[in-house]
Length: 624
View 1 (cartoon, rainbow, N blue to C red):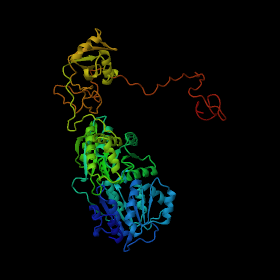
View 2: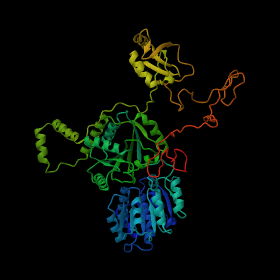
View 3: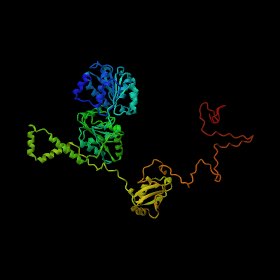
View 4: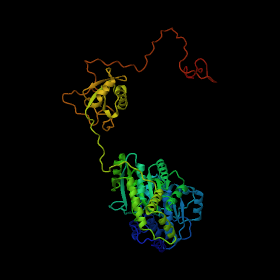
């Protein structure tokens, strides 16, 4: 390792390296192309900074005067690119490196002037870097190394064409490093096309992923998701927390809700300008904000100090996104908590995501209001136990307070001051995370009826149900299964409500324009279509799901439209002629009177003849 880099690591307190950093510093891999897969938060940025140093410096200990860039580092988002630039700046500071960045959202003219002055390392996003290459404002002829950070995410975001263009414009003898959390087929294909004899480095072992992250799946009621997020934030009181949402609209909604509840919160989404996003992250770093509500793309690759809590307000769309979200915490040996907010309808999806990601989570209810308040008391007692002794300057004020007020009054005032600084927890509906989904209860004793309207007249269960409720004085719970036929419909009424239903109908037994009759039961071979209907098979209504039942031996085969009609049946009707029959020929000597041609009126204008639009000697009548 170069002396300047070793001193930079020592100054930053790095006494040991992470597995990925040790792997890329293997002397056997020096100068080679690398395809590296490592977990998020494993120190990949510092790893590739150390890996390309021998290629950039050669035998020297410091960089020569800045000119055309020697290295490119490409990242998927602006935040990650700026973070990489900060990391490489302190790592290469002792070697005299000049760094530049080209990212979307910044002034392109300032970036061009910076590139003209020269830089050793350029950190860029794919789209903006391609713009500079196309406009000729960056010279890639001196490149010695290219690094693709979070390569899988760049492909997911649609940067494949930009990456292929950039790599195609770079010198072929460069060193190319691909760093990615996962290596899907698309990454392997990109490596095969643009790397030379790349060495595969995998530091992801068969052990549980994100071993420093505690996963919690929090079961909440259907309408308690946002209240549960408030209680989770209050329960943990993390110095920094990220709440992930799937859409910008949800980010705006949740940011407003948390801000109204007194949380120091910032938003991070794609609709913000680069300056707004930079200010939001800076507020998190300097402590002015403690909660960041963000979408996946906006928060990709950001690294915040003291980030101990990640909350998935909405479940991610895939297991990779789950890992990348959770990887914002538990970095560089720190512990973290990743909380999934799971309403009843999303429980199956949550289990599926955890299974795909090979993660195990502890299922639990959301922290109740009492649990949050008890946690506040524990933190208060711990803080008081670690308080510094009273100073001389504080002694007069303490003596005045203790002399004027009882200890109980002082303690109550202290508790109220603490309560004013925090948002009150929410009262949540009780949810048992281990309880199985409720099974539908049996309908019980019932009576069946039928009406003389079915599919042929446009009847369906959604139309029939409110009609029966209104005319018969029923509720939805009084009506069970509804089964439709072409000419009639069957429905089930609870035994206790059947007599009242008949009394409301009267002797005519009429519901709107339909006649109701008692039935012995549902039609044979039917399936329910109402409240107790089974899941749809995806086939058209009226057709039985599954395979066609086998035909009995004594059952005649169905008629085929390809079999000719037997001789003893009625003959087929004669087909209509395709063309009109010709008019009978006129007898000789009979002249047909002139008739004006039918159809469109002939266009008037120069060159158009009269009398039916026929030019002398040309065309047919009416075709002029």
